[in-house]
Every structure is written in structure tokens, then in C-alpha cells.
Image (cartoon, rainbow, N blue to C red; front, side, top):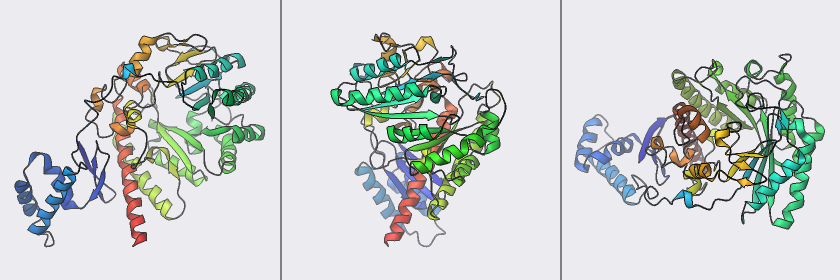
Length: 464
């Protein structure tokens, strides 16, 4: 499978199965587009006719370009076979170990974000804070079900986890006390809206947390429209912005993200990303809201063309700023074309329900935080383990080959089939798809590859 597109002056040819990216001239681009359905002599005739008014494109040039494309095909760098489609293992038989937990230490929040999938932190249930005893059992569950894996991930989540900060501290201390005995290493992270953030908490987070995610949507008017306080008074933007700046600087502009959500109301979201960059943040993620069409802020199909233009605008501006020494990282443009995850990770994605689970304040296990509260997806609890093995087997089978819409999608090995929760909420099937999300993911990948091409060109120019 080959995907061709033009972006920011580059002709890009992506060989999906091998992962090879080719930046080519117009002639080769056109040859590739005809390759699969036409013999070389017909391609040559078509090219000579098309470029008849271009003196530098001679018959010899055309024949050499065709030969070069043929060599790439022979080398497996173009139109390569999908060696995984038929050889993929029976994922249900995989002995997957648990690698990560999302600990819902607080089903409560001090903000009333209008797009919150967690129902203002309550997850369609009741307000609750996780006790140390439940959290301790969750860490024990993770240790016991992680097999020989050494590195384990634990994210403190909510609601707003800082509303239960004493328990967070106790659980970190307990986790550290277990590392040597069980040959484990915990990487703790936390996601916060910043309202309760202070110097004491920041000192602890910087000492113990591998990453911190800071929730802010961008420009003041955009943020405050969707992220008000529960009482409706004041500006959350004004309160959290200086705190977040302090976090970013204290962590050396690394191992954090400012993470926002854009909606139908700010389709010019690139301006929000650039606003955050102008505030000094270098690690930025702003993502599309996922909401039912009935909500006024939901992304609509008719919004997609403008959103794609915004990704193009953002990619070009990111390159310009990097060239000027004012660069930043945008999460969805960060890809590794030379390495990256193993093929099984690229096929199966986040591992929800198998390698990754969410834990409620009372110890229930769900496939991920977006399923919490829907008892159809209750897996078990941290005391008895996974009891609903049939549901877990369904999640084991989530992969790009099980999703009909993924099979012929050029982005499949980079998005790994997308989010099972989003697929379920929009199609009723964890192996379905959320088409708007897919369209935006494809555009983000195109922009990310273009950025890599531009940076490679700039690096080569410097060497010359």
C-alpha cells in the first residue's frame, strides 16, 4: 500500500507496510501514481506526453526515473507486501501482562468543564476519594500481574487528583517501598487542572513524578468558556496560567505537557496552540473534543476541512519557529520514522483492558478511564483480579486487522486503530471507528511526515 500527497511544497510518497518515506520530484510522483495499473512503456508514454513542454525531462530522464522506481519496488521500499496481515498471531492467546494503571484517586472536581466525559469527575456515579487501602491494593495488583516486566506506569487521575493529594503521597511512598523487593520500577505521572497546585505539591511532583499533564485549552476566552469553576465565578485561566509556567520552567521545559481540548467553538485551534507556545510552553498537546453530535460544542463533519487547514497552518508555523530558534513540540506531530514501538504495539495500540486498566476509588477495574462508570465494561476489582475474562478477550482482539475501516488505511501503523472507547461511543463496537477522529488522525500524520521531510532537507543543506 502506498499513500501519496503534497504538503508545503513537498511531494511525499509513503510506503505503508515498510514505513519508508520518499520525498520525490514531480516526475517520480506521477510515475508512482501510475505504477500498479500500467506497464513501464505506457507510463513512459504518459510522462513524455505530460512533460512535453519541459525541456529538462527527456526520454532518458523518464526511463531512468522508471528504473529507479522499479528498483525501490524490488528492494521492498515501495509497494511492499503486508507481512503481518496473514502472519498476525492469535491475540486472544497472548499472555499479556499489566503494565500500567490509571488510578482514579478522586471522583470529584473543582471545575465544571462543559465537555467533561467524566461528568465533572463523578463518572455517572457518586463523588468519592480513593482510600490509601484501595490504592495500595491496586499497586499490589499491578505488581502481581506484571510478570517479569520491571518498568510499571501509574497515572494519578480524576476528576482532580490533587483533591486527594495526601493519598497520592502515601501511594508513591508505598510504591517506592516495593520496588527493590519485587524488582520493579514505578514511573508515576499525574494529570491536573492546576487549581490546587502550590509550591509544596510542585516540589513533590518534581521529585517523584516522571511526567505531569497540565489541563488548559489555550486562549483565555477559549479556556474560560469551556473550563469554568463549578460555581461559575472567576477565571480558571488567570489562576492556572502562572502556576503552569512555573511548572514548565521548574522541569526544564521537559517531562510535562500542557494539554487542551478544542471544540466546534474554536475551530481555529492552531491559534490556541500558538498562544500556549507564546506563553513559553514547549510541550503542547491540543486535541479534538469527542462528543455526541447533540452537543453544541461537538466537532461536526463539516468542520473537518477547516480543521485540516489548521493542522497545515500549525505545521508550517512550527517549522518557521524552529528555524527562528523558538521551536516547540506538538504532541500529534511527534513521530519516529526510524524506530518506534514494536510491531505488536503498532497493531494493537494502547493495550486497554489487557496491559492498561483504570481503577475506581472503590477498586473496580475498567479497560480504561473512558469506560469507567459503564458497568457493561466492568472487568473485576483489585482484590479479586479480572473476573470478566470474556470482555478482556474482546479487548485482546482489538487490532488494526479486526477493524474493517483500518485494513486499507495508510495511518494504521501509526494510530494503531485509534481509541476503542471512541469507537464504542460512536459505533457501538470497540472494533468500530470514529470517522471524524480518523480523518483528523490521517491529516496529523501527513503533517508530521512533512515536518520530518523539511527537517531532513534543512539538515542536508547545512552539511553541504
